[in-house]
Length: 129
Image (cartoon, rainbow, N blue to C red; front, side, top):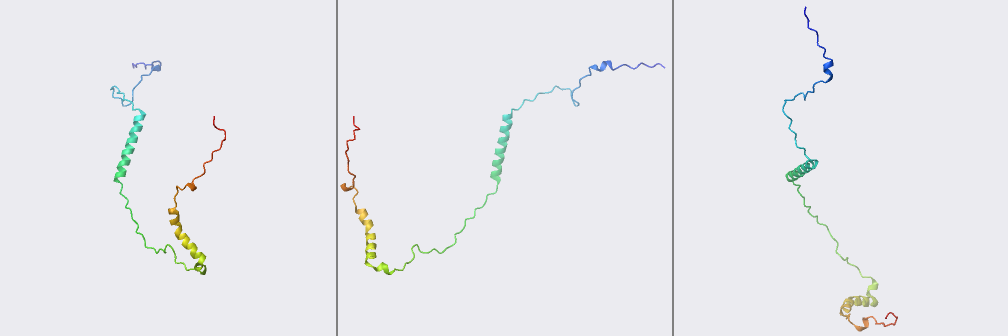
C-alpha cells in the first residue's frame, strides 16, 4: 500500500496563530468613550437626591394630636394670713404706713438736685505741660 508520510508539524508550531475572542464576528471593535469618575459620582448623587425627594413627597403625613389641658385647682396667689398680736402694736402699724408711702416719696424726689451731684475737686497733680 502506498501510504503518504505523516507531515512533521512540530517545527512549524513555534509561532502559533493568534485567534481573536471566541465569539468574534470579525467586525471592527468600536471604542466606547470613557466616562469620567466625577460624572459617575454626580450622577449617583442626582439619583439619590431625586429619589429622596420622591420618597419624602409620597410619605404619609403624621397627624399631630393637640393635647387638651386638664383643669387643675390653683391656690390663691397670696394665702390669707391671720394677724399676730405683734401686728396690732403701734410700731408695726407705723412701719406698714411708711412702707405704703415710700413709693410716692421716691417718685416725688428730684434727681437734678444740686446736693446730689458729686463735688468737683480740682487738685494740682502736675499733669499739665
